[in-house]
Image (cartoon, rainbow, N blue to C red; front, side):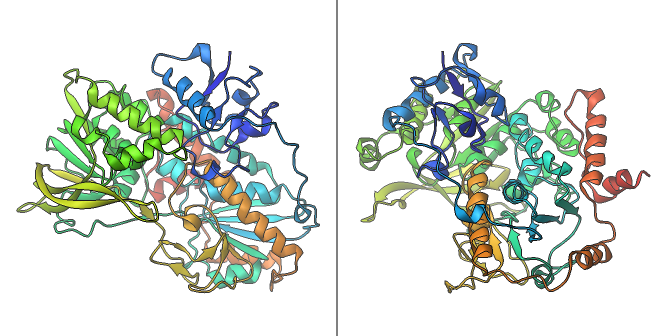
Amino acid sequence: MAFVILQACCNDASCVDVCPVNCIHPTPDEPGFMRAEMLHIDPQSCIDCGACVEACPVEAIKAEDELSDEELPYVALNAEYFEQHPMEEAQLDAPKPLWRKADFSNMRVAIVGSGPAAFYAASELIALRGVQVDMFERLLTPYGLVRSGVAPDHPGTKAVTDIFRTLERRRNFRLHLGVQIGEDLTHDELVAHNHAVIYAVGASSDRRLGIEGEDLPGSHTATEFVGWYNGHPDYADRTYDLSGERAVIVGNGNVALDVARILLTDPDELDRTDIADHALEVLRNSSIREVVVLGRRGVAQSGYTNPEMMALRHLPGVDLVIDPDEAQIDEVTQAILDSPDTESSVKAKIALARKVADAQPAGQSKRLVLRYLTSPTEISGAERVETVTITRNRLEQTAEGTVIAVPTDSTEVIEASMVLRAVGYRGVPVPGVPFDDARGVISNLEGRVVPLGSEDPIHGVYATGWVKRGPSGVIGTNKKCAADTVDLLLQDYVAGALPSPQIDAESFAKLVSGRAPDVVDFAGWSLIDKAERAAGKPRNRPRVKFVDVDSMMNVVRGD
């Protein structure tokens, strides 16, 4: 019997570290790790020891003989990966690099942001003797998109925060919630008080469509909608009209599928999650019966992962629909299938879409329609969204091998009362830090921050996570990303390239408390966390979230 990795895989590779036979791949040392949808267990090499089950932070690993019918496809998904990537003889553990063996006594590092990338970077640093880490977050709640981005019906994914909570007990780690860098403290002040500053501020903005009618009432960003139903304080007061029967989502990544699923899921099911109360009330009165998801390119280039797609096939009360014509294999897609370099996950994605397209709808009361090779060209309506005009695309492959969508003369008009764009997150500038507006990231080379257009690093300033590489990967992908950035920082410290702080640590602490007198530390967050969990207990919910600053501060102060 082998173990199998399932949908909730976060890719942080904790399971890789404990596997005694090296049967979980891709590992962080392998080229495909940063691009992988999920990790896989080789069924031929697994010795059924269960170490990976204990190490998994999101409970995504189960024994093969314990799988439900809905989970059985993951057996093939794991096996297919190893058909393309056969196991090789395990390599001996590489020795720690020299820069990890240095003396880091009294080194001070500031981390801006408190999402997974920030906490993974902090974990790397506090494991070194003598390093002091100060983490800054503008909100009064930590964990970034794990709290405000992960769909409420995916509680297993949120369990990764249990790992981050262990930092609370470390004396060389301080969390400062409610501190805005650029307002309460400046970038220059962080640099002056620390050997290094790591920016891990994520990607909190969104990309625009650039089409007529994009700003009509009823047209929204998925970023805001996700924040709204997750109780993010910035979006808690937004209003959404769900009185129409059809919504259109532009983009087909995992965020788009999350939004579609929330719109169509029975509110009684959502009432068992940590969805914000204000969103639950609106969804209970929703008239949405069909969600249409538009993808610009073909099935093979779709942005969602196979686990997310597989979960949609079992959404209660919802028919998953794909037009057989849009799942056909054209010349470009056939070339992808025939190529030995095409990842097994891409081939599985094509096979899965065709299976859905061939199936007959069960006649459920709601429908989720996945469209491919379609681009919106106009959103229309007299006073609010009424229709979306879409253009049919075809695929072409460039000389460099890139697959692009080329518009045709074929158009179609879809009636809809709501449009949500989910075409990608992008970072926002931090005052005083170079920003690459074209890419939506902090200007950097592999994590070292550089002036835009230069290759000369700004000594002591780094980036990690989405604001470093763009919005790609899953939660655990940030673990390797953070480790790579920290390695650069340590190399620079050992080489004497980092400037020494101009002001002592005690003065820095006084500066923080003086500029942000209502700063909340880990103990304060624990009070908020406990209060939310206590509020959820009588309702059989994991928590009832506070969605405004005043309510949170009342808990911290004991009011």
